[in-house]
Length: 326
Image (cartoon, rainbow, N blue to C red; front, side, top):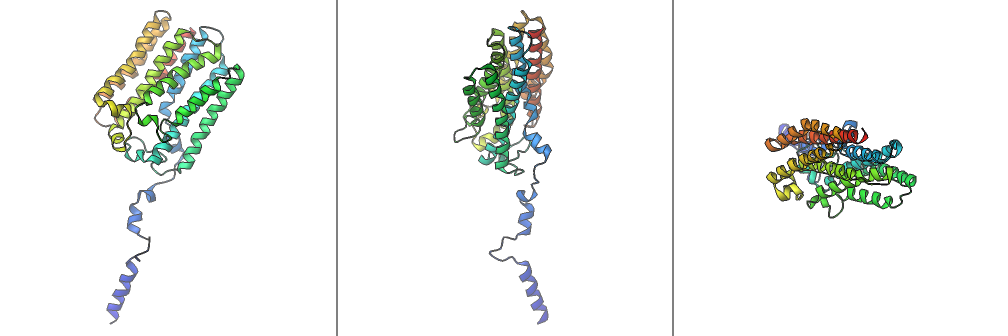
């Protein structure tokens, strides 16, 4: 009698209660249980530093174009413009992390894990960080407005922040409707470059317009590389980027056009500003990026193409600044 009783007691101890939530094996395998809190490295990674050159390029070109009208360079205003651009770039990166995470889009990601989607940080925390960077950009923009007394710039700044938020935020994000590249071209190309020139000299020479187009196209190319990497996952998640709409082959063609046209613009400017010929050196980054986009086998390879294109943008902007300032 003792043995059966002992066996019965043993079974009663190992069998979970029907209403109990204590399931060791299931908890051990749960992604939530295995997820570690975000480290400083994770937060820095979520800022996506490889995209920051896209914020620097229009400031370089716009400041160089301003030097064609008036010298010396307005360093304080130029630096304030840089704070605005970088603040918006980092802010939109964290805002995308938050919005895509709460939508569940990042559950299908191929690239580096996000803070929200991977459960490394609370969505509210990521949102607060995004808003802090938007606030930094807004404060710098307000300082520029007060300094230049161009009060209409407040409306432009508000439009920039709204565009940054509604890229993936809100009920109908335009980034999910194939309009991401259009808005990137407008705000990271035209608005950022022309705005930088205007607040320094209150004029817009044609060189600023040419440079703005080049900066905008390269920024769009970076976004195309990113979306090409995620094309299959975005289809599953219902995220209709331009790449999802037009397909893989058309995206490769469009990427190539977006990368090479700025060099054609620089070639035209070189007839008037010879140093602009040096922008051809940026092809050392651009051509490998194009090659990867056309020959990649694994989506992760496109992260390299993205970084190379971002570097191309920075080199393009630096050489144009030199050409205009020389």
